[in-house]
Image (cartoon, rainbow, N blue to C red; front, side, top):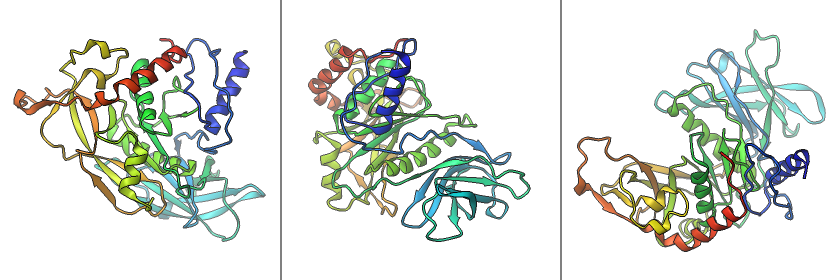
Length: 382
């Protein structure tokens, strides 16, 4: 298969999100076998590539989404000093050659000085349709700014099926660790994955989103990715969205899938989100069960955790436009395992750690899943 045909096939598979195995693009060769697309489109619009666009010296905008219930475009942005009075926006429509001006509103989500916020662009005319693009600019600008595609919701929250999307932050991860992370979370019911800024991992249920964020600070990156993740998952029609790092794993203690767990706790109300406690697992300790190290996965090798309860939680966001309060789920039901160094704190004592091998309840299923991925030769070359 030529690399050109393979690239087209892979793009179509990634865009339409059919139900088949992951396909990871080789870094040195693009001629790997691609999974054929047999199912109808599930997640249209999810793969429109965004990029951070500079509007002013301090304002950057990334992605835009149509909020159907309220009739405005919601844009993910960062800035520390922007005022709605100094900003203008335009909206483009498919059947109208000239853009239409809109009104700007700023919805601040200031978190620890990150400068993260939402910017709204509301159409000045009703019943004109749904815009396909938007732009922001200052009055003195000679142009109308760079157009940003507007994603619209694909029946978000209307399905009776629970679907979960996980978004991963742009951090270093080994090929084997990435495969393990994706294979495990698919095993427990994650529907699709959105990977920011790591184009080496692509596939049918894996969508890679460009990430040219202008600031290096993690405290700025995390809220922006989480916001885009929720809105992108809503546009894809998913029920829940979760933003994780590569060293974080959702681990239910009794349920076999997130579908059954979330359904049990939400009932018929799909607009409820959840809060799940983070638990620190210590990377300084190695598991002696060498037979399980068939892949370089932290959860298989690290089973010692801090005994103290954490006061930190990860949010499982409902993608409903009018989601309600989040419900905390006990760590005895599900927890977020975060694999970190526990000895950075000099006051750490051995009596404050316990062994917790709960992850190994998935050993057999996970081993079969990983064997399948490896037999398909899906690992990128290094």
